[in-house]
Image 1: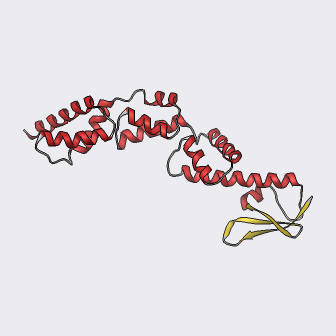
Image 2 (image 1 turned 45 degrees about the vertical axis):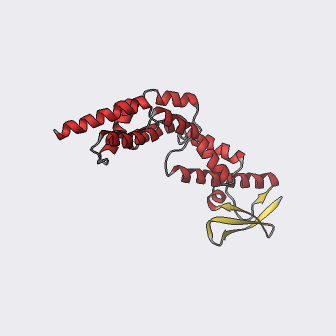
Image 3 (image 1 turned 90 degrees about the horizontal axis):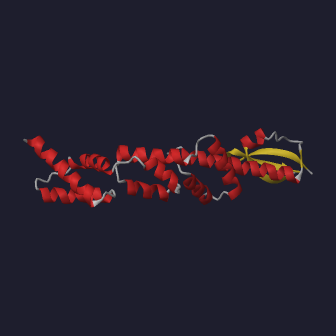
Length: 211
């Protein structure tokens, strides 16, 4: 057993405290962990209790890192796991944090895939094939991807993408227009057949509007 002789704020790290046992520095904790665990001077700690405190600190820091990463946009489970590993957190802490976030509904691959699809369709339409590839790269399971992307229509997506781009093209020659818009749609994963019909449609609409 060891006795807590001091709990001291660490210089330059306002949210962490140093814990002294039997007059010597032993380890540091997030201040919130020290409070939540009821740590105070004079308290006796066994080796197992010290391990639990250090483990609670790892979990808290890992959870904070996950919340920070999620604050920018939703993430897939695989994305979040990879980021936390790169931050140096151990597997036990990461899995415990992921379990907590799943319970809270903050990590949900189906919801993430839906968010990704909606975001792409609203701001940068692309083919179902390319959207599927992006989600696979994010670590989303095949069955989840198929369920979420099942209703995507490449012709509709290509048309909306083409309209967003066509007004920037000043070409008055169909071949030039086709090459430029076709290349744009190709980079977004659309097939030759979809590109062909979409470019013709947009070109014809543009000509009709000039009559």
